[in-house]
Image (tube, rainbow, N blue to C red):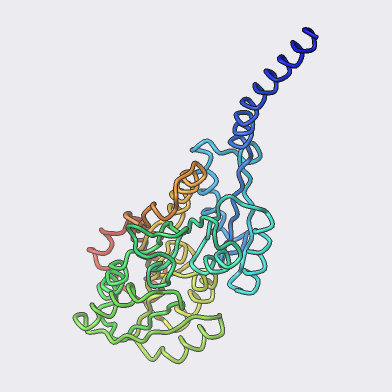
Length: 333
């Protein structure tokens, strides 16, 4: 009888110890679980050199913060290629992946992700005007479950027109090639400065390459014409035909991204498009460690660069002003 009571006491003691230890072990297993990051790329293809640069920067950013693919994190990618139906399908596939956090690579990636996984944290990179597009309440306190990094500061748009005018003083008419997500802030900045520069603006929406070609063909009339190509998934994905059209119609054109100039465009003024992905890795890390996206401020680029292609300037017959040449961060000859 005494032996039976002892065994019962020992069993209860062991059971109680297990009850205390089990949650601790479970918590340890939970914290050590491999985290999952779903990535939806709105426009660029997987083999596009520009995406490879951005994607590599994101992965390197995670590695610098202690995340290693296959050890403590898995990253799953899908590419929307400017097709919203395709993007929605792939967002549903990412939902089946059961991610802990999402990366929206580009403005058009947010809605499909939000539709498929409305409660999951979304960190975005290279997004245009997130307030005007209804993604966040304000930049300082986004609220909700979405935050991230813009690819343009509104004032940059105005400076782009100023730089174009300095490079090509004869320009009087400028087409602004823009995507539907190019918000009122950046466009308003261009419109505000145009009268003082003696420039008449023609906004042109870019929905596909055929529309872009027709718009530029209908706009171009002569030597007083110029072109601003704003940031956006479609314009970036269609950069080769846009650069070709600008050369065909001899349009001095300024772009938001360096890649356009590397591939033959005249001049660009804007932020490094890979840097937001390194910063986004930092926000992904913070969210995986328990911080709320709505409390992380949306950030605009702080470093801007001017890239100039002298070969293209020569082909267009431009003498580049010394002031522009001196200000260029990179000159391609």
